[in-house]
Image (cartoon, rainbow, N blue to C red):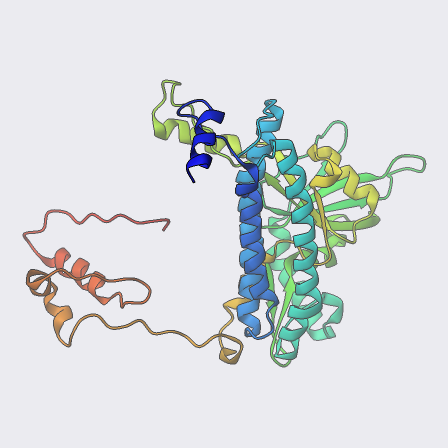
Length: 389
């Protein structure tokens, strides 16, 4: 021990520690390992199907945030010429390459799980996602009426050509890219974009039949494209989604207040750089390359998915009423107050402190405190600190 300490003291300047990369995990890859563990819960057949759907939705939502902040930060560091390695010994460029390979594999596994395992398991239990072509004539007509009355009025097709550049699409919004036949023989194909309305449910519930049936809103719009482009020949339509840089870069020396700086950054997000393109796996290579080029992305930034985009939409299935057998049993919080104590919460607190740990302990003491404080004439104000409301 003494020799090792003496050698260490003589091998580096006083007060400076050497970094040993083998002793450190890269922060971004470690986070991806965490998300892979969440995905394992979605893959675990011992979990009820709706719980598995919930975990799949969480994985997708986590990846969105990862790209908006962490991948965006790496890309910014590379553009600024940063070549310094992190404690694990990886430069920003090396990190981005490893992240890309890891996420591509994760996305392939996740969509393979959802399409080949999870959705069939839910369908066998009475909850299914169908295409309009799979419905009977009566329900197809009902879906067409929904498109005509509720969807079509809020759609705005956008043409893309030399005089009309690629539209400034919102981050994480789902859109349809369409390739239209040329207006005249000998001309190039035309491109248009239709934004899927975010104000409408992504999973449209269709009445009738046994169990519960949903249709993805993208497919509802695809089935009604003739109404959007009358007389036009639609060669193909593919859903896609862009993820933009949402990293906050607040300048604390710019003479602005924190609120003003935050407002500027939030406005900047609408036009920030694109860091990821997700596109329907059925899209042709021509269309996928065209969208990627217009968004300023390389091949490694493009994620082809074999199914509907944005698995966060699975929450629409998770919260469907009934089907309790497909969920974990609900957990009841432990009651903290004795009988009658909720009506005299201040007397209880005068007798001693009360520590509650949510969600394991009941929330009644908090509600009682706020309600009785609101009725107490001696209370001047009620102030609370909320964490990520």
